[in-house]
Length: 78
Image (cartoon, rainbow, N blue to C red):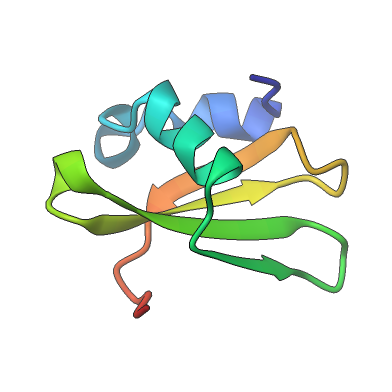
């Protein structure tokens, strides 16, 4: 999985350290929703069963494969 330095830095935060690589890959491969931002970055969401169905948002760079950010989106509603 390709990642940015920003992602690597934020991953050390306690609220993000629990996010597993396989969950990120799941969101990338099987998103329930996808939005392309004006700058070309791609936001994808999917529910994570192991986290009581909370929605993980993964932000990819405009190449569609490099992970820039990943976090549980408290404001997302399906």
